[in-house]
Image 1 (cartoon, rainbow, N blue to C red):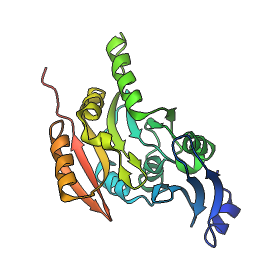
Image 2: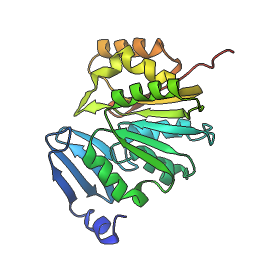
Image 3: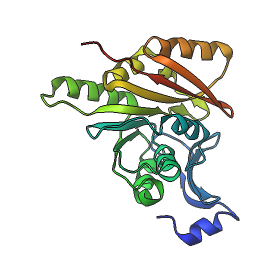
Length: 233
């Protein structure tokens, strides 16, 4: 839990909790700024508590989306859990089960340490490469005799610094993701445009796999919300 003193002091000067090289970043910083837990690299902010515009916008549209007890909400690129913090603190969502995936060990360790400041509901945090996790999930689901939990909502926040991860322009990412989604599931994607051509290529890619594409501007970024079609039996 973030202490009162840490939060108070952070309004006058950032309270640095950790700095150094992470498992996948040369320079990483965990801090408290203006009362909010923040994860950043030199050229980008990865998590900023409830002040993370793409997912603030996403939750405005998704907070009423039904998540059944046999389903989960998947966060690819968990960071310090802005997705869960916004759900909890802005929309009083605490009963759904989140599964967060990230390959930055420092971020996940910090999130576990400060869990009560991030999300007061059930979660599972997985230290893994996102593609490796998706591939393993598909294989595990195919081999299991037990009906696996599907994802009713997915949040995608995959960046290398200020650059979007190139895997988001590949069917090798979207195909296995689609495989673990429930019918009617929605996916919120934090997207930063580098050019008109790049944005068009991205929209073309996701339109191959999803329907109902919404494009929501939020500062320099966009939040795309897409939906998996219901399968006809």
